[in-house]
Every structure is written in structure tokens, then in C-alpha cells.
Image (tube, rainbow over all chains, first blue to last red; front, side):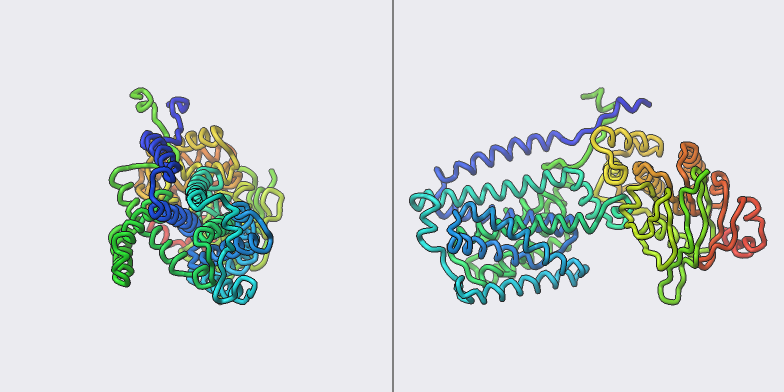
Length: 342
Length: 242
């Protein structure tokens, strides 16, 4: 047998079609400020930010096995950094979002040094405790409104762009940009050599360690990068809200419970899962939110049914049945026979 | 000939249970060493100590002239120690080829076409090439064992540790596996092989050691060791299995 007749490819037909469709969707979304209403744009903006949060949580929990229930720490931290940098530092809000990411990475290092000593359920609880520490600390800062919070001064809001519609368009594009950036970064990372190592850790830590993968370093890196980007998303969330308070900024419901719901029903440990999960979550919310607490019960029910009936989430179901691939991460060996046919 | 691996008084216990009791021996470059001993004797624990997934309580481990006692499993893997697990540990969500690629890129440090090329070669050698695109979680037992071997070989090892790789295979499967291991040995890789299927082991190894209660109780020429009185005593049960 001649090995030269074998070729290794990393793409697929369905992935190519998906990439073209994805580009078209992004282009259409970019033009939304010219055709969408104000409320629709707000909703889309929020959807993009949840997509970013879910993709990041999925990378951290679904691949690196770091099941954090305390990511609200970084959402809130990012939000507060935006307010502090713009109000006290006079930094341009858009620039402040990037800075919030850097500061998020800086604060994640000592936090990781503490909580990485914990395993499994203890790690999860540890992350939540850290988030509470963050919340209580920011509630002590009088200059940022203490426990009752503060609003972004009008001057800073105006400095973003002239006129309300221009500001709303900018804020929408930032959200779309961040979501695209996060999904693209997760995809490119997982396709890289380090990403292959992370996928190995997801499937089997014992074997991964025995094949030259430094598990601690890989997880540490993923945690820091995830938290930095979560802080950026947090800054953007509160730039849209224009008001911040400790309870809103560090809400475990808004920034972690819903995000976990999205990832679990979509399909944990896949790039496509959080995208599908976000769409389903927003579809449920827009149709059922008027029902109040019943809406939350329905969410819980959906989560339980999916966990029991389709543990790999909705994308897992689709992938198993149709052998579909939107983000090609893997390798395919094409045999000589297939080559002849092609 | 120089020693590729040297154990010097390596010990490990979990409370009152001693899994390695001052183990000392040398493995020469290019040698194939067989390890036998009853269940629970500490054979797999010895592999865990050599690969670094289990830290030793005391003693020294020297690999290729370097003291690796304090090194992590990942570092030891990159410097050339590879193993196959007794209970296969596949990356079940990845294909056979991707499993191989992890070893080639992370442990052997290869990239791009070079890594792909090595994986294809090894997969052909281990007869898994036709299943390159199959998810590892869907393989049969024989193929899972072959995958263990494939991954270990894609790490380009200097020292290969095989943990009961012939267990549970049919006679024909076993024969083809023995041939593959002979070829690997012939290419210059040093091997330590734990095996209950004694005839498979004896077809390959140059020397045999016997471990019982974490202690090295006998070593030497395979035939002499197998015929020795203490081995006959320990081994009556295992003879019947084989």
C-alpha cells in the first residue's frame, strides 16, 4: 500500500457551505441599523452578548472541564472597570472595553491561583464565593455608588457618537463584533495545536497527561483568556445598560445560570452548541417572558428534559443523525478509493 | 550498552498498602523486558511511577541519563516515555487519526505534514488505517488496544511501556499483535511489557522480572525465571489462565 495516495484534509463540503452562509448572515446583520427597528436592534445586541458569554463558558467548562458558576464575577468586574475608567480616567468608552479585558486577565491570575487548588464541585463553589467577594467589594466603593450603583454620565455617553441612533448603531456593532470575535477566536484556538490538546483534556485527562499535555498550564491559560474576554463582554453589557449596580453586575442568574442553560441545551463541548442554545433561549424568552415565574419553570423543564433525553444537547442530536459539521476542527483521512471517485 | 532507564529504590505506599517496595533495576538501551506477577502485585503502579502519573514517596528514577523523579508525566512523555493503558483510555469524541495526531503533535512535537505522515505510517503498521475516520469511542476491544499502541508509537518513544496489551484477544489477534511488537522492538525501541499471556510475552522479551507485593522477587533469563521455584509457586493460578 502506498501511503502517498492518502491525503489528510481539515474541511468538508458542509463546512464550506456553512462558512458562506455564515458570512452572508454576518453581512446582513452588519446592515441591521438601516433596516431594523430600535427594539429589534436592542434584542439582537443582547443576543450577541449572550452568544459571546455562552461560547466562552463552553470553552472553559465544556473543553477545559472548569465548571465555574462564578463567571458573573468577570461580567461585573468588566462593567465596573468600564465605569471607573471612563468616569475617573477619562478614557474613551470603546477603548475602555479593551482595557477592561486586560484588567480582567490581570485579576483572573490571582483568582485562578486560589481556586485552582479546588477540584470538581469544590471548584464550582469556590468560583461562586469569589464572585460574591467581588460583589461585596464593589459595593464598598463609594465613588461608584456603593450598594445602590451609579449611571454613566451623559457627557461620556455623548462622547461615543453624535445622536441617539448613531450611538445605538455603534453599540449594536460592538456587540456583533465581540460575538464574532469570540466565536472566531474559540474556533481558531480549538483548531490549533493547543486546541487539540484541550480537546484531548476534554475527553480523557489521564491519557492527555501521558501524551505530553501539560494539563494545569493548558487549563490555566484557558481560564485567564476566558475571563479576560468575559470582562470585555461585561463592559459592553453595561455600556448598553448605561447603569450599573452590584446586584445587577454580579447577578448569578443573568450571567451564569442562563448561560449554562444555553450551553447545556445547545450542546456542551461543541462550538455549534452555544449558537443553537442562544437562539432557543431567546425564542423561549420572547414568547414566554410575559408569563413571569412560569417562564422560569418552563426553562427548568426544558433543561431537565434535554439533559435526560439528549445529554449532548440539540447539536449533539443533529450531529449524530446527519453527520453535519459547521466548524471543521478535525482531520479527515481520504483513502485512495475516495480520491479516485473525486 | 548503556541503561535507558534506572530505578533506584523507588517506593510508594497508600497508607498500609505498599505498591512499590524499594524497586531497583536497570533497563538497557534496546532491551525488551517482561514483567509478570499476580493481580494487585503493583505492576501497573510501577508503570504509573515510571510515567509520572503517580509520584513516588522515595527513590530515584533516571531516564536517558536524566533524573526524572520530580518531572511531570507530560514532561516525561515529551522526553520519550510512552505507554499503553491496561484499560484503554481513548479520546472517545475524536477519530482514530485525531487520537494519533495528539500524540504526534503534543508528545513527539511534530507539526503539519510531518505529523500527519507519521500518523499514517503508524496506523498502517498497527492495522488501523482503514478505521482512521472512526470515532475512537466506537471501536471494538482489539481496535482500542491497537489505538493504545498507535498513540504510544506516534509519540516517537525511546521507551515503550505496554500494559497487558494482549489480554482478552483471540489467538489470531494475539499472534498479529506479537509480530507488531517484535517489529517495534527490532526498530530499536526499548520495551517493558506487563503481560499475563505468558507465551506472547516470551516470544518477544530478552529478560523477565517478577513482582509480588510491590517487590522485585526474581529476575533474569525468561526461561530460568519461569522455571524457578518461587515463580512456579506464585504463578500456578496464572499458568492456568494462559
